[in-house]
Length: 211
Image (cartoon, one colour):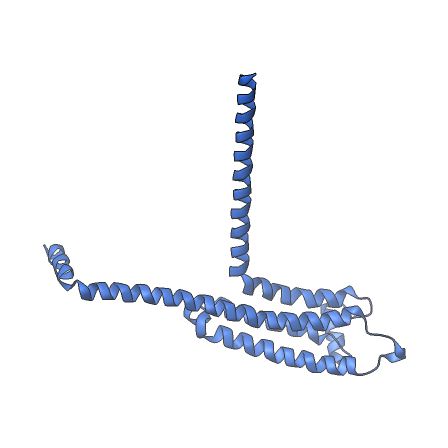
């Protein structure tokens, strides 16, 4: 009986140990995935900005579906007060510009350079345009006395939220790169200080190298 109980205790310990290792592995993988998503947030947000408004516009039967033929026809008959084709087009152009600038910028330019400036300019200007258009679209009564469709409201809300999201992500990316540059600057200053404190040691090393 004592032998059986020891075997059961050993199996229980092995099971709990393997279960705990599995939990830790899942936690590490989740942390790595979350870090990857946060690090690549500008890319994911730009892709979502290019896809979501177009998907919302195409999900309704009463709204025009995005295709080369429909885009050209709706642009030729464009009316600022009623046409909604410009909302996903603005999102696509905005995300393309921000994604190109993000890809061309390195660490210093991401911290204080053109990435944050261009992102804020594109997002704020598109947000002003969408807000003015929403005032015209929702300010006038519907033809036939109907109510506004959920897809129309979701289209404006989605475009506005994504514009604000671009600003938030660009600001956080700028802060992260600024911290990296600050740490790098501190490391360089510490190395320079050590060289100034131990000049004789540097001379000895130079002499040994010359030998």
